[in-house]
Image (cartoon, rainbow, N blue to C red):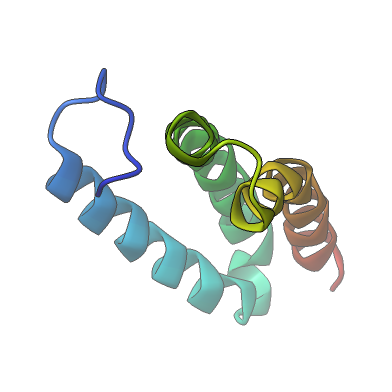
Length: 94
């Protein structure tokens, strides 16, 4: 919850809801009839958590400068788009 941007309200409920949809989406990818829906839901989820990943990088960079950990957080941002492609691919393969 610490990485949630301050401009978002209800940090704990948002984390719980995103976790629920992450698990539900993962299960949906394993059910052929639901793969496409699950894929698009997970893509929306990955896009919705991107601001939290940016906020995490921003907060740690402000406190620590460019340490190894902060570099890893920075490299994690483009990885989010690789994950989006991977989820899209997983939902389109049937």
